[in-house]
Image 1: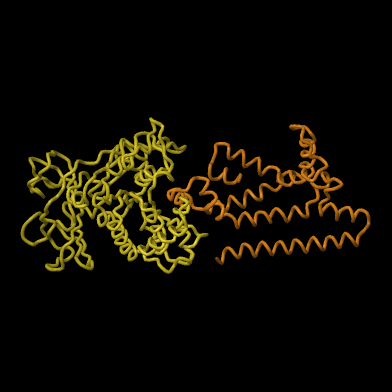
Image 2: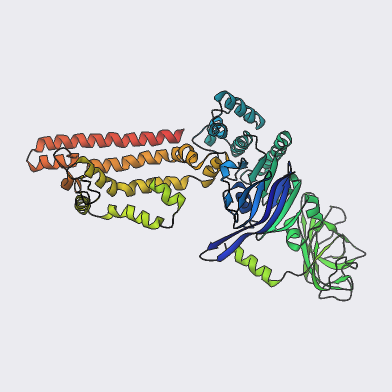
Length: 367
Length: 183
């Protein structure tokens, strides 16, 4: 069953300086029950706005949202269920634990609002605290606890009502890297235990890849691609998705009869079996670890820089004036200034980005 | 309450509302007093407050509203909106959120705001001297009259009492604010 359905959801703002900005454009999505789904995108892409519309903190400009089969937001039918009646669990980036209440009172709040008997509140709160490894801290105040503990209070507060849907708005970005990892596992573990559906908003690709069953990449208010983390990494549909997941090289090429040439050298192709139906100017996208270096065959280039990273060596290579980053294992070292040959595997091919797209991106960056 | 409306609800006329609340503060006390006399001597709804203690209260509220407004709006600005949104997502209505989250969080500021107003009210003279009646003499007026009548000693005594009261209140404010913080 589809737990969350968004149909043609659009949100636009009007500001004095920029005029009308479409924050979210024709957003269509359905999320299955028990799925862990991530919204990934750079800041300002509209992912948080979308989440806030699902939660009910923002109204829509157009479209409709269904939660568990029930219509909760629809501008045209004038339906708008306030956030407190949507029965969601939500965790915020800034923790949002109440400093004037202790841990127990914080977690008990959603139950108190429902006027449950106090014995039941006590039992459920202590269970939620146990699941979030907070037992023994009932009487502590949040200001005396660490960031990780505060975020676990927020998690406990969200799971204590046993919600069907959890909305997590960059819950890990205020934590240090080590803690992030362990919180990630904790969220996953809680999901397995309680079976809730998760929407996880993040700008950290590693987080999204590690946590989600499916995810989407958003940019400038529209969905770029929806799929499993593997699909998105291996078959990005456009240049933006390619650059957002993992490291990328983008090389300008000219494609002629399924062979790709660098613009300065039409004699030898850099890649000779282009699968995409493109002709003329295009972009070749490669991952740094999908290019291998050798001394005998391939496309001739020059090493400009060598950097030792922990588990691999990173080379900067100049091929007819275009720079490429290549990561290889530690054997067979090249020197800076040495000639080398490149062989490329599994490149992706895209059309050149048009200038209108670049302009829109620039405009949004000023917001 | 007014601060909440201006800074959280953000109505279109918020700027005007704020200006109106702050304006009386910049007026001379006597102007305020005469204004109050004219307004509350039966001109509106036939309500006559002149010569009662209530007209002084009204004048004080008008004059010192800006203090409270500023101190509680500063506190409201400190309350991150996600704290309120978290409450909403937990199932609390707007009213529940205001009562259980927002108000307790700005309570220290509201208490200190109250004393901030209470202290100058105690020594207020310019407004009260025009508004006081036989049964509603304020401390400032009382001291002034004793002094006018040449009763220097009782005037001095009352002044000492006033000063003592102010010092005590001042420390009480500090104590309350500090208590909250250490928690």
